[in-house]
Amino acid sequence: MTVTAPREGQLWSRCGGCATLLYRKRLRRNLDVCPECGEHARLDAPVRVAQLVDPGSFTPLPERAAEVDPIGFVDVLPYPHRLSAARAGTGLAEAVVCGTATIGRNRCALAVMDFRFLGGSLGSAVGELITCAAERALEERLPLVLVTASGGARMQEGALSLMQMATVSQAVAGLREAGLLTVSVLTDPTYGGVAASFATNTDVVLAESGARMGFAGPRVIRQVTGRELPDGFQTAEFLLRHGQVDMVVPRHALRGRLVALLAAARAGRRPGTPPGVPGQEPPPAPARPADGPARPAPVAEGRDAWETVRLARHPGRPTTLDYLDTAFDGFVELHGDRLGGDCPAVVGGLARLDGRHVMVIGHQKGHTTGELVARNFGMASPAGHRKALRLMRLAARLGLPVITLVDTPGADPGVDAEQQGQAAAIAENILSLSVLPTPVVAVITGEGGSGGALALAVADRVLMLQHAVYSVISPEGCAAILWPDRGAAPQAARALRLTAPDLCRLGVVDDVVAEPAPGAHHDPEAAARLLREAVLAHLLPLLDVPRATLVRRRRQRFRRFGAARTGVRAGAR
Image 1 (cartoon, rainbow, N blue to C red):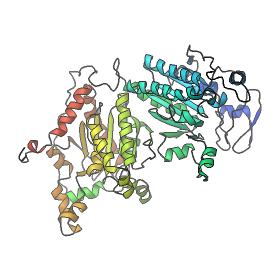
Image 2: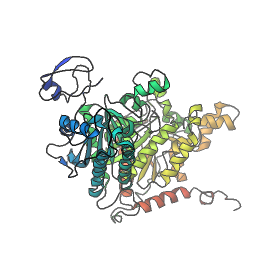
Image 3: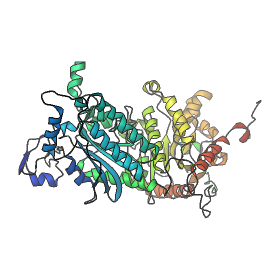
Image 4: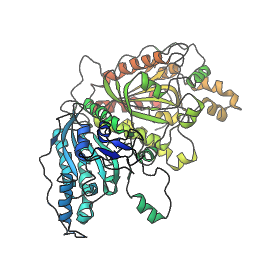
């Protein structure tokens, strides 16, 4: 079990994980992480602040912890005596340290809890201090970073302690409505009322390696259920697998992750404009046309549709993660739908494109059989669609453009997916994308299969790689329904008009992105360069369009596919 970091006067400390005797100065140089086994010792709040913020940048809030004893609680000792002992033992006024600081030159408000002070419990004074930090963030339009370490609500304050969960959550909600980033960093341990409120209702939830988090503690769960708990229960890795946190970060990388998140939030802000509020942006620059570049002539066809299908499915074709590694910079992956799942068929997170911060979301297949199976062949579950939607909404709140990379044979058709509401999850994505107040550029990079593809492709600009395909159904599925045998799949492929030139002529696709011959799999780096250039060409004109106009044009774009507008007989109305 994790132990508290050694006191200043100690020369040696024994690791709580492997029992190795460690020289204290060496341990401190390693950020209080055991160099032998990687055990992360608990940090007190001042040490945590010193590790995270730029030197000399932390300014404590002027608010002081109030003296509270609302219900005159007495157990073995009166509550005021316990408070006095905690203050003497920690040198802190309460179980949280709050202030403003810069992290990698990105200014933010900061609240860091200290488990030494009555188990980091959430009382009225703690709730008030964290709320003041959130209000300072709202007043100065700063991101808020919360570092949690708590056993839960403070029992000595009764129901007033319980109310702090709502008080702080309400302050976090105010920041969300204002489009200001909120980040929580879960450290060991984070339980009870803190876990069930502001530790998990922020925009991004990071878990430090070795952290444990849950509503009820393991001992309570065993007593209530009478069951043994699985290995690793409530650990950071367990939380990641079950979609509860965005990422697990070792202590040495934690500051860097926060720098990347805060930099993205700052880049997404337009001066003087509350993010997420449509119609408040500056007018479009006259030098940059709002409707984007003129559509180039479609790439010459010269290839049979069935051959194009086979190229789109080529196992060597670059995946979303390949493009993130080559066409984009500084990718920070965010995980989980926050409802219990982290679908491996969808990856997403923050990245940079030509120095601009963007949110990138895409289907992930893989190249080997093992990778394809692990990623479910790029077929997203409802959890994958919900994860994508969470990231899209976060991008809109932060004022960041969204880029989607579509490569899926379709949504997961399994029994579990149906039980978890696959149809509703896809429908919610399509609906939300149609009104998302931020630029969206979609690229069909391989297979664009049915509703699973459209769930990421309701966009201001839809691009398509030269040898990609996009269709309402697979050729095999179409042949099985309409032809006597599945051998008619090549014929069905031709009939479906699913190639990039076909769809460009139909107006479904705005631009065809060339691929290196004979396909993207032959030269993935060249393919990435071409994709990068095409995305930038279509994204840049969208950045100056007021958000209300952006949403209106996006809806008009898809409205034109109605029967009367595509030359199909509309029928009686």
